[in-house]
Length: 113
Length: 114
Image 1: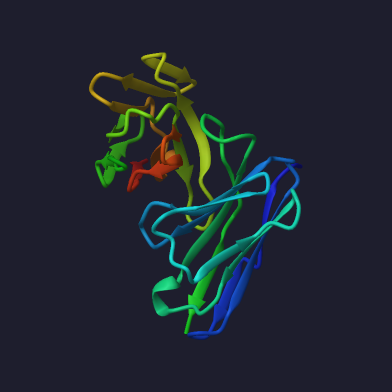
Image 2 (image 1 turned 90 degrees about the vertical axis):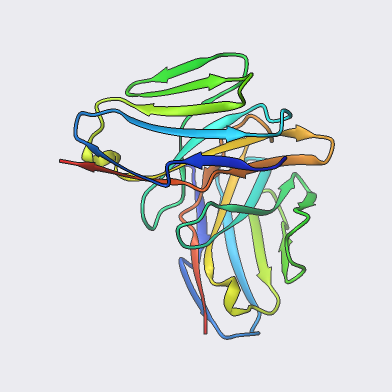
């Protein structure tokens, strides 16, 4: 089945220790998104790739970076995680932007000790 | 200008009843309004979506009502079932001069009592 896969599902890191979260997709969608979702809150868009074009949200901290080496894979790098970065990180894809369904992965739960 | 306001925050409905969740947006550049359903530990999944050129869309037990002039839209779940118990997010997205935006409402936790 075509899908969005996130690894790992659970990630524990220490305060200030860099961490990388992975997302892959078999849908061949040209847009990939990263969202941060804290407990009982809405997903908040961090950035998205439209093909190779990187689009950062204005309020996304510099601590968060992303890479998209090819159509299928996208990575979220958190350079120096703080306690406030503990959250569920959701990857999503869509065929084009705007009025197109976003397909979400199961998320990676990040814990910062 | 960028907010999507969702209410209520939580909702308890009897089995067989109607669940109604409301959302309001501000930016008239938004042109796609989806509703996502999220179960604990899972990513959101698209439930139903509407564009502003229609006032209503129905898929099975789920209906979106859209009021463009009021900048409001709502989700109606008819014959609510315990399996509908989940968190529901409305969203708004579109291209505008500042770029592309997709913004989620704060979510509504629905509990359907058997």
